[in-house]
Each structure stands twice: as C-alpha cells, then as structure tokens.
Amino acid sequence: MALRMWGSSTASALKISCASKPHLYLSRCFSTVLDGLKYAESHEWVKHEGSVATIDITDHAQDHLGEVVFVELPEPGGSVSKGKGFGAVESVKATSDVNSPISGEIVEVNSKLSEAPGLINSSPYEEGWMIKVKPSSPSELESLMGSTEYTKFCEEEDASH
Image 1 (spheres, one colour):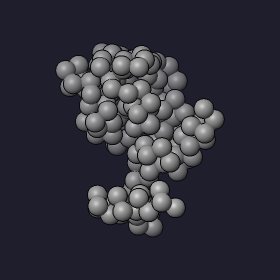
Image 2 (cartoon, one colour):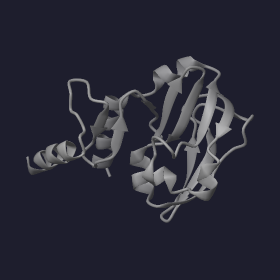
Image 3 (cartoon, helix red, strand yellow):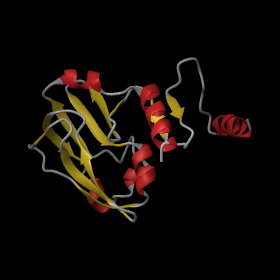
Image 4 (tube, helix red, strand yellow):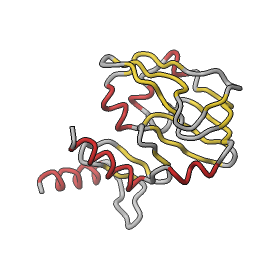
C-alpha cells in the first residue's frame, strides 16, 4: 500500500497521467515500459513508424546491466535477422549481446553512442536507440509483446530469480 501511495505521489509530482489508457507503465521493479512499442523476451524494444523500425534494449535491460561503458554497433547497409545478435552492450557488470527482434536492412545506427554510451542508461527509449531497420517481414512484429505483456513478463522473470 505504501508503495502504491509513493508511486501515485511520484506520478503526480512528475505530472504522469494514469488515464484510462496510460502511455507509461511502471512495473514493480520501477523499470519504465512504454505503450505503443513492441518488446522481445530478450529485452529489446521496437518502434515501427512508416517504413522504419527503431531498435534498442529496454529500460529493464539497462537497469539490470548497470552503467553502460561501451556499445558495439553494426554498419549501416548490413542486415539483421530476428533473434540473432547485431551488437553488444558492455557495462561495468557484464557484456551482453543485443538481438534483433525483427529482420531487415540496417538503414541507420546511432553514432552518438560511440561517444556517449551512457545514453542507453539515461534515455533508453529516446536518445539511446541503437539501430534503425527497414523491416523485411513486418509481420514479425505481431509475435512481439505489447507493454502490458512485457511488464508481466518482467515481473515474472524478476520473481523467479
């Protein structure tokens, strides 16, 4: 109850609305999960807009990794395959491969991450994106989780550890 009251007062202070269809979800571990994105079980998110999909690791993933100190990115023009690695994120705790939740051609990489890898920690859903892809099979998005499903997935995963 105290946690719920704290969350409510924090949401009010941050001017986060909890309308009937929220755009922001906070799981028990306080990782941010955004509505309108698709999520993979390997903790990457996809934002599909027009003919391009933006991909990065989730807030939940970066929180578990800790401070990101290096990001390995592919070259534009290459391709990614669903479920296969395309890069790596090195933190003070570990190095983790990053898998692509969808297949397609890499049209852009976030070059800011070579100079400021911490953007993955400070802005995982905005400035910290890793790659932009032209999906070769947009139907692959249908197999990914929405925000509610991903929040539940994270809570269950954290409870089992």
